Image (tube, rainbow over all chains, first blue to last red; front, side):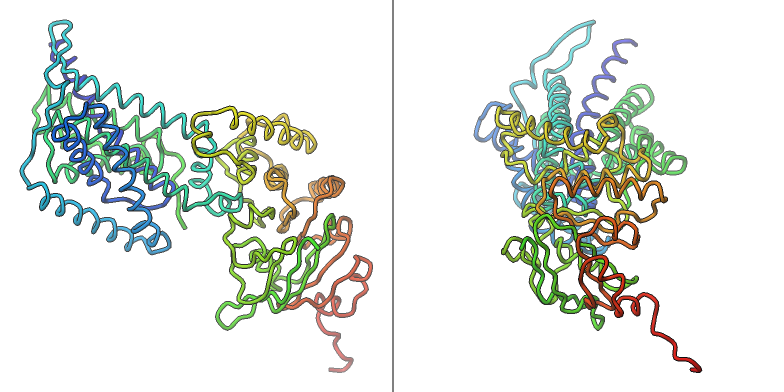
Length: 292
Length: 256
């Protein structure tokens, strides 16, 4: 019983880490650019494929493949900002939704053509290494997911709180007009935000690709959950997104472990609907950002 | 001449909000821009600070034409401004607000910034010294860690001016700094602006409060219906026929 419980907690932390990494980019892009990026799941998917290619085909060490995929996707994120988000920034909300949804469909189908729709396995040097204690065995890969997520969150926190760049990002989030008059180049901040968001999504893809499978549709499944995470945390709220990612991850895996895995998605969306009814600003949000 | 505007014009569709306005401002001068509501004062400000792209005309800062350039570029050229309705970063502290005000003076690269190199630390130290001095001069040094939204109204206005001063601007634009202030707060603001004058800051101020304008400005320009109808010392403006007519309307002929 205790072993089962610990096992599910570990699974929950892995799931929570994945949601966190994807949600951070989504919530930052919303907070700073005012754009809801429906294509964010595809950045996660492309990250997984990039990592798979670097690690399995080019036989690079896993950590190098992880960094490589993050860099590749950071460039993709910047392209996305320059080619799609920037022209859409002044557009009505509906155009933004259609635009990013279109990118999502385009990227997913391009991936199906390029990589075939069949799921691929992504073995790494950590997949078959186990850490055993209290009679349970945890693969190193799972520990790695959690550990690297914590490191990335710490780095992001440092960037946002203690650097000039982070201050400029927060200023843009709070009041873009005033930020521009302080000499802050909004285009540059948007570019950096998209690069960071895409790199974090790529990290999620490379980290959990080896645990689950890598397929062109993986982004679609992830994005629905991650939207739930972002809404729970309060749109645009970075800290809220982290907490709610882990809450949902743990709730899901404990439900799967102690009731049935059929119920795990029900729990997520049950929590989401309850929050939308009783606390529409999100569990951690008190500042709903109104874009006018 | 620090600021030279020539033939500055802004049309919105068929409406000419500012019509061929010329304005010159010398270094160290404080100039007031007054006029009835809707006379184009704020539009004029928005053109100088880069928010609007003028339909026609030039804005020269120390001889360099900056008309139609982006606000962040204009800011880095040395023009800072405040707003009619306060636009602070309300969820950030007083200190963070002024630090962001200094953003366009920071010359470090992204790498310096992220790695916290000696260069970044040197810049930050210089910024810290200047800003601490500024905040002390304006008696806000004891509220550095207060969130901007928790300050009293008058202090928020002053913080917005200090934030604009953080970039050591060549020219400071104040858009109705006394709006919504009670007489005591206005009196404090007049003191505040006098301190800025003693520092040698060049200021262009839009204001309805005549007490403030007459007590702080060296020169006054008057706009009406988008045109400049008068310019001169406060004493000259007070007795100018055209200005009186613009504010009080035409004299009604007897019997009409």
